[in-house]
Length: 258
Image (cartoon, rainbow, N blue to C red; front, side, top):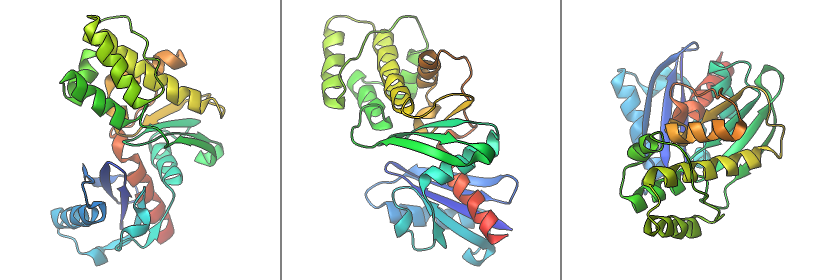
């Protein structure tokens, strides 16, 4: 039996094909100007890659910002529940999840058997999100991948104190004029992101094993910054942290269809 999870986020669309034990395939693309059409195109590509018809999929479950608008979904579910199911698939004993996506950041607290017992979300400001990191990369004229690596090369970090993404950009430009090294600025940026999300998580009980997911969890510089902020060498990151929501949706679909 095969199920499919579709996560239509603010910046990207993620799909996972699941067989009850493992990921059979996954696809990721930018949401673009028409996220629902992009999700449909990606869904059809996923089926074609495995010579499947829609009738071969026992259930399709949608999540994310666009979950209620994907016409081929049999069900829709909260991204909080789906992210949790996806992370617990990899790390059964996780107590909390830090998820940083394109437009928001969230912290999810888990109880026994991966049950969600609380969550907090910041979707009011771009600072501390993937969009903010993209903006920083553009300001510094590097790719997102390049700034992740640059931040790992050296020591020390400047302070980025602005709580607004627009003002933070001005602060970064000012530091460039002051000849502050780029790697020092980047570590300051990533620690600013880490400070925001950990402060958000402190509204809950951010203890025990913690996982980090979302597109930003692909950034090694942010991973190190969160470890630094938590004063911990351990932060669990799934193999493909961007698709945990879609994976969780596929897992929940499998449970419902069984």
